[in-house]
Amino acid sequence: MSARLAVFLSSRMLRGRDGTARYLRGSVLGIALSLVPLIVVMEVSTGMIEGITARLLEVGTYHVQVSLPPDTSLEEMQRRSGSIAAVPGVVAAIPERQGTGLLITAGSAAGVNIRCVPSDIFAADPGFRSHVTVRAGTPDLSRPDAVMVSAALAASLGVSPGQSMSLLTTFGENMSGAARLTPVVVSGVYETGYQELDRTLVYASLGLASRALSPRGSRALIGVKVNEPFGDLTGITEAISNAAGNNTRVATWREIEYPRLASFRTTKALLLFIMALIVVVASVNVSSSVLMIVFERRNEIGILKSVGVGEQSLSLSFLLTGFATGLMGTVAGIAAGLLVAVNINQVIAGLEWTVNRVLEGVSFLRSAFLPTAPALGTFTLFNSAYYLKSIPIRIDASEVLMAAGATMVLCALASWLPAARASRARPLSILRKV
Image (cartoon, rainbow, N blue to C red; front, top):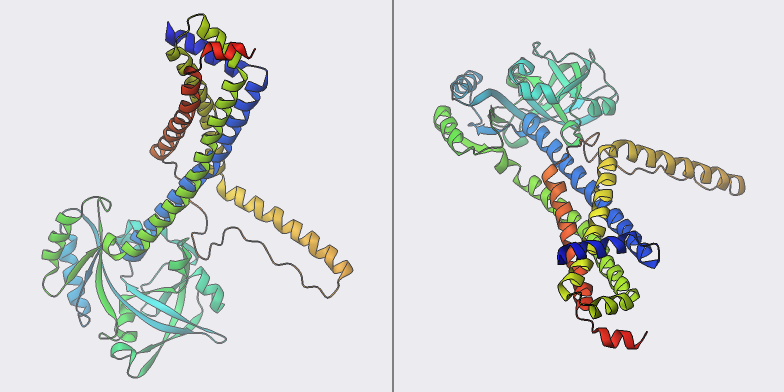
């Protein structure tokens, strides 16, 4: 009976048309607005971290790296990669030699990181193929002088498929020794979507490595792809180490990319903490609203207690009011936040377009009165040069449910103090003031 009475009293407060409803509507709006940035930051950061991690694993560091002695011959690298490929759970084993150099064209030059890989890497590595998009030309590296350059690098150098360049490297140890100039031809222009990988990366065949890269001045490795890169890699790394033989060092992607991924996680945690503080402030507003309801309905509270309504029923009615307020605000806020998060790329593009049109208008008006005043710059909300070209979105249901549950618990806790105050009120002291 007390629970039914509490629900009835709570529903009356929620449906009220006086100041009570106004307070509650404001609290619902406050909770909803506080949850929108929290949900957007949560889902956008999750998508960004997973998108960058996928590209690092499939294009950058592989799932497991086997470092070989620098002077390992091409034949020995291929033999060891064949042994590793036979390990159960291994999807691909890619021999690779990495070095640095300078790409030179008729009008410009750029420092590059050179990755010499098998010419059939697109066929041998499905993960690589799925994250590398060929924008122009072909990914054919069968010619010993063929190279694939990124779209950012091609734009910087002003090159296109079929164009000849020169690759300047030092054929010595530790970047010392005589310089070597190797002619190369652009076979294709690619893009991964992650500018940090694309900015200076050039792919070439292993045949070019023997002509352009010094064995002692470059790095020899075997990149390994496995079936379960996010699982426990202890067992498979031991098997890979045994298959690779002596004088090797095996490292997983978690070890190689630990500093970068730890930085991502720390940044996400700090952003979520700041957004969560906004939700806490909004839940405190629920406490204020319930407290105002208690103050405005003190006469009703006195009458109800004088006719025998128990403290438990009164306290529960105000707790239910605060909880229902939090529930409505949570549902509205999560719905709005997910709507913005799913369309975040369009939202960012729309905001940038709007702000830039306003800046153009202001610049035009300024030029009418101040002809020598410089034009206002372009507003950029999301700079793809430091992140992904576009934000991948993946909704994590567990994170959303956790945020919803925490918000409703905060609203219930915020309602507890005014609810307890209402239940302890003395009817005689209230009715004397009527």
